[in-house]
Amino acid sequence: MLKYDFDQIIDRKNTNAMSLCGYRGYLFDPNEDLSGKYPEEDFIPMWVADMEFAIAPEIIQAMKERLAHPLLGYTMVADPAYPLAFQTWCQSRYNWKFESEHLVYAKGVIPALFSLIGSICKSDEKVLIVTPSYAFFKHGADYNGIELICSNLIYDDGSFRMDFDDIAEKAADEKCVLGIFCSPHNPTGKVWSEVELKELGEICLGNNLTIISDEIHCDLLRSEQTFCPMAKLFPSSDRIITCMAPSKTFNLAGNMFANIIIPNEELRNEYKSRNLPVENPLSIVAAQAAYEKGADWLNNLTSYLDQNFKHLNEQLSKHLPKAKFKIPDATYLAWIDVSAYFSDEENLTLFFAKNAGVLLEGGDMFVDNAHGFIRLNLAAPRQQLAIGIQRIIEAILERA
Image 1 (cartoon, helix red, strand yellow):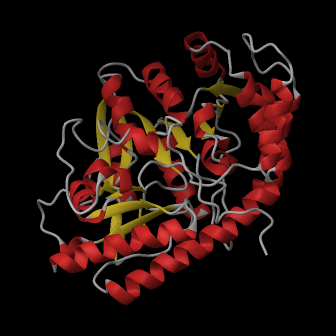
Image 2 (cartoon, rainbow, N blue to C red):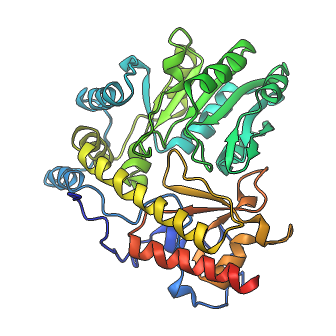
């Protein structure tokens, strides 16, 4: 029996929640006509990557205790208790140690990414990613005016693997100086093996690329899975930047706080020169409480998400046999191939909004190599999740 209640349905209206208020202008043109089978007030949000679960009460309590102090002025991570809590978390879960002086902070992994690309790359240089990809990897390159090079993942009946020959060829370009990789991978949910990470790292480091390893989903594993930070495999290298955060793991995305480990002193100093060390005081105490007291909550969450994925898999197998889906190794995001039911030109994000009343992200939102896929956020109470899945299935069957 779970200690925490993940079945609780929480009304997020009037909280400025992005999942409810931000889809126009992100998923669609602000003036897009979304009239269809369901009115917008009945849309089920399954798109943006935060959870519909209450955060751990231990975290709420820590924030309340901080609010008992009447000052919320400029704040920085000055107390060594926070970095110690995060280091202890990494040591206990991943048997990975890093130097405390290598740790800096950001208002999120994406703000850090935008800053780091600008620090590492000159205007005529290139960034390498694998696709499909979290779109902000591309946005970060575009923002800094840096050319993007893409290597398509090889897709084989629901499974994905890196094309190391292609990666090696593209990394050999002398203008390619940075690789940005997601581990575990978003959107596929793949946990790369140590063998895969080793080969990827050897290719990139051997071609003098700096690596940014976005490991924000590293704690969100299926029960039987384990995770290895890429930097752990290359302890003598200072060219791997690791990005982790409590935001995805503990549903603290709105706190805008991330951990960035930069071993290279020159890059670290450049990062510090671009980013003020001022943090939200509530974000610091929430993150510390998460790493010190959140393990039980996360273990309960893992069990609940395992069952959510099992439910989705059963429903797809029963009702949509042409859909291709494999329960992912990590994340709370399902990556489903529904291409057998749609034409090449179909806007799947718009289709499911109009015909299912479900907000989700179609494959065209993941840079490249994602035709016919949809990404679903399963971090929701099962009753709500079941309705969303049922609507999606019905919408597909009605058009068949």
